[in-house]
Length: 274
Ligand SMILES: Nc1ncnc2c1ncn2[C@@H]1O[C@H](COP(=O)(O)OP(=O)(O)OP(=O)(O)O)[C@@H](O)[C@H]1O
Ligand SMILES: [Mg+2]
Image 1 (cartoon, rainbow, N blue to C red):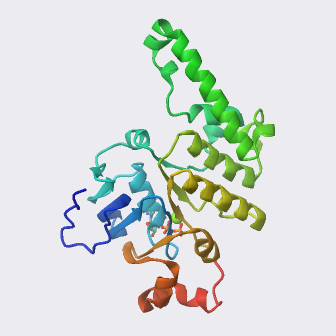
Image 2 (cartoon, rainbow, N blue to C red):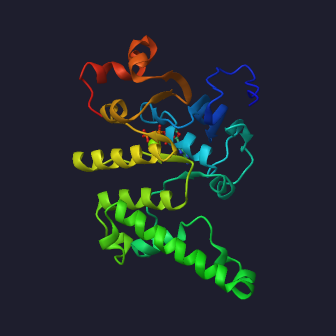
């Protein structure tokens, strides 16, 4: 792989990077939400993106997934520059993010939610429907089997015919992740997948994230709970005021006085419980 030209930006790009961004900037009106973020997500890792409220984490995730364009900077998937690709093309390359359950998806059943997230849908082409009906039927059968198996794994199979909007908050979190898994990610972006859920469900979702890693999926997750980060993440990126403050193992970041001062101090002293 050829290392990208960093253009003087702080470097955190490794050759084993599944996803990286270089000198990302994004302003809303006059306010800089992201101000030179540069980091890479090691292939096969569970990487945490942490930082204070308003640090730009969600904005960065939106830019990485292609649902928001940056003002400047580059996004690379491995050694492929994906900066100009729309989100559906990034998804085809395996870059999938979770979304909160939207109104439209809430109006589908749990099972339908997975079916619309399936990656290969030859039935979408009218040509295939007329000329290759066998192929369409076979693909649909495989998708239905895959959806059923994912729902079973995530404990949602018995709820498959329920309206998604009627699920509990925790079940909706599991559905969001199941939908992402249905899309066959190689790289999964999760924005606070455990926010507002009870400790038992935190452990369960953490277990699913580990299963995904074991299956070869690279995960980047925004997470406020540093206990969770320490327990399940291999690598941490700290964002503050739209810039990458530090990257490394949680144990290394504890030694970094800038990080401790900017973000971790209160947490490590037990003064802040986020
Ligand atoms: N669509 C938008 N329009 C205007 N300002 C925005 C928009 N999205 C984000 N911002 C601003 O950009 C900054 C970064 O927001 P962002 O949501 O990315 O932070 P965050 O790190 O995800 O915060 P949190 O931990 O609270 O989720 C904030 O000051 C926010 O108010
Ligand atoms: Mg956010």
